[in-house]
Image 1 (cartoon, one colour):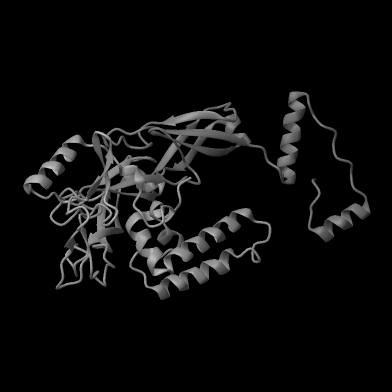
Image 2 (cartoon, rainbow, N blue to C red):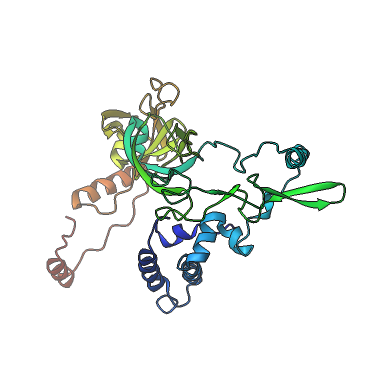
Length: 378
C-alpha cells in the first residue's frame, strides 16, 4: 500500500511553517498515543504514521528532499527516483554532436507542461441527485509561485545552468558501445541549480493555492458519476494550461427510499383491516408530492404496487423518469382495545379457529389492573 503524503497525514498545507507542523503533530500524537488507546492496533499504526511524517517535515534538509523527490527521494538518500532512467539513442547522438560542435542546449524539463488533474469525492443526498443542485467548493491546488515566477530562485537572482549536465538534465554513463543516459545527479534532471532559493516556495517554484468554484450537478446522477471542470486542476509550468478537476459523486443512502437504477423503492405499512377490505393510502414521494395509492382487497404483505413517473430522472434525458415501487407491509396489531379484541374473536369464531377465551379475573386481578392502569375486556 503506497504511503500517504506526509502533509496530508499531519493535516497541514505544503506551505506550513515549522511551528504549524509541530502544533499539528502534538495534537495528533496525543490523540493516537498508545496509552490513550490500549489494544487498538489501527490507532497504533496511525501513531507511527504521524511520528514518521513529523520526523521528516521537522528537519529542513529532509523536508527539502521530500518536497522535491517525495518518498522515493528519502529512500534513495536524497537522490532522485531511479524509475525514470531510460535509453534514448537520439539524445545520445545529439549530446555527442553538441559536445563536439557546440550544438544547442536542451532544457531538462522539456519545456511547458500542462498541470496535473485533481480528483475529489463529492457527497450528495438522494433528493439532490433527483432534482439537481449547485454546489460551491473550495479547491486546493498547486500554483506557480508568484514571488519567483515559478523559477524557485529568490527575486533578483536566476537559476544557474547545471555544470555537470550543461543544462540537458541528463548525464551519460559509459556502457560499452553506447552511452547510457540517466537523470543528472547534480540538478535532479532540472537542467539548472538554484543557489539562492525563493523564501516563499523554498526553491520549489510551487505553492499551495485555493479557489472557490461553483458546479451545477444535473438531475439523475448516481454514485460514481464523474463530472469534469476544465481548467480547475493544478497549474502547469509557466505559460502552460492548468489541469482539470474531476468530481466523483457519491450519493448517500436515504432513510425511506432505496434506489434501483431509475426506480425508487419504499415500504408502506397498512393495517390488517385495510389489507383485507382494500382502500386508499396517501404517500409522500421523494420530492414531497402527495400521491394516493389504491390498495386492492385481500392484499398480502410484500405486495408491490407501481406508481409510474415518480422515480429518478434519466441523466441523459431528464424528462424520462423511473417508477416508485411501493412494498406493502401488513402490520399485525400488538395491542388491542377491548372492542377490537371482541371483533377479532368474533372473526376467529366465524373462521372456526377461535382461541380459548381468557379466564375471568378475580378480585385480586382486578385490583392489579386498577393499580397498573390496565382495563380488562368486557
